[in-house]
Length: 336
Figure (cartoon, rainbow, N blue to C red):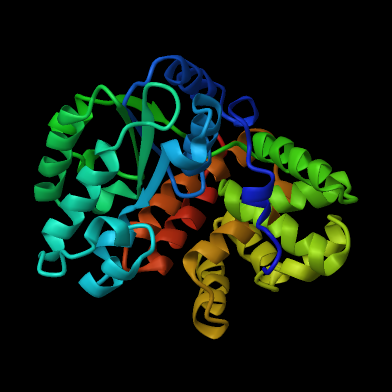
């Protein structure tokens, strides 16, 4: 999109964050600069929460908030790091440094300068599960050295990847994926701020489209508004589409409910092998179709199973096995 992204243009304040516990943690950190580890799934709002904290904690967040994505370092060559305008001032005349030393130098320099306003600044290290242990040891020393003037916020999907000395120096803030209702409320805030026409069905559809990923839901709403002129069910469906085989998904769930696992697996194979859809895409449509098909205990069971399968899909080499497990479990009684 050429226009500003809604995730930036209508970024939430701390009070707008969908998770009440996260709001409480950040309100405390706003008053006292605690080091934080924000941990939770992709799209739950870890980065947005940290940006909201920085805007409210600093008079001059443009200068006193530093955002470093770990991929900016570890997924780049020395030349790419040196040519990044954010890092170039720290690395002038230091072309002989190894990549390791370049990263350590940028980190130390970012932490060392005095805040422009107030008594401390904030550094966000995003996607920190990718930091190797030796770099984490260097980070620990930087955190200790500049504790008086720098608040560190470490965002990660896997807090277990952080070494104990770092975890012990940070307050743990779990950031769960927003619920469907919380996503609907967040989308309504954004589309109203954008002055875009919308209806309840369109927002509900987009919340389901996000599947717990709030960023995806908001960007889906922006795409729908730009291309469809309004955020309605029909506009969202036509703009974003879906895997396009609702009849197959319906038939697959119906077969699973009746314990006809062979037929359910046949439908699943059609989606995977004939149409080439990824497990995550199929799972999202299973949830969307399931919301119109089930309620009560059976819908709750579907969401519980989907949560387990979603995690397993990231670790497994076989989408078919993981989704097959969901279908087999859906054939059991709702209270099983």
